[in-house]
Image (cartoon, rainbow, N blue to C red):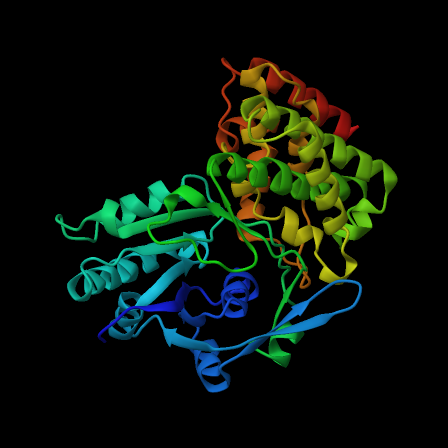
Length: 400
């Protein structure tokens, strides 16, 4: 290994976002794509074929072939380190629950790179839906790096806003072809312009932004909030609904979801008046609602609404937006209605199974709505008295 391959991207995570989004963008942009993953069967097939299909789900399915692809097992630590050492850029899209196992591998690769190329910084695109992602990666990685490693000079931690929707694939789909992946046509990756240490890759689909926090919040409090609200309001209306497009086909629910998203938009506009306009946020909401209704995606209420402990968490899509509205003195009643609807959410997957954590969530709600607001959402009865009172009124009206 005697040089950096500027046109090689190493992607940790050969899952939904890794293959359908990051891998696709960089492959089409002329990059060699190297996936690192724990799934050995998937890696072996990537090595054997050197390409994979992305099935774009819309009015008519379209297949995009992602070429110039390799795979490396995450168990092969030496080889992984070598790939990182010689990469032009890197991305992580492995899922939050898997980061603890990936961070040491990345650090090992960065140390190897520093030994071989002490003046070559590496930009790491953090393709995870998490707030303050760069701070998390910086803190986690420095725990495994030598004390004299020049973090600020050699590591570009690039936060993103992942707006691409990739539905759960049925068992029959993965069995038909382990490498195929479904996705929607949307293909724009919003990322932090200021975080790059190297020149930003000149490829279609990358949308660098100066104020990244605003765009991360837009994703969380407009996209994620609207998605979840549709699932929770829709399930309460009719527990027999399966698909999101069924929910939004009901005019009453569509209007309720849109008004919920608009309420959140007014909160964002108050926080970021120089980044957004009421027109741009309204247009974004209408575009999202159209995308949510893409029948070809087959997006289920279960997928969109499950994992209640996380999605109703203190700083997540609903509770986080309510807290901001409360602090700014802006209306939040529609968002609060969606949150209370969520406490009644009991949707199951194709096998009739709920997530284990969601079964445990039922136990919290069984002690009353106040328990959810304190234990899950992080509100307290002293500072947020009005939230508790309004939530209780909504909960009682739903039960009636």
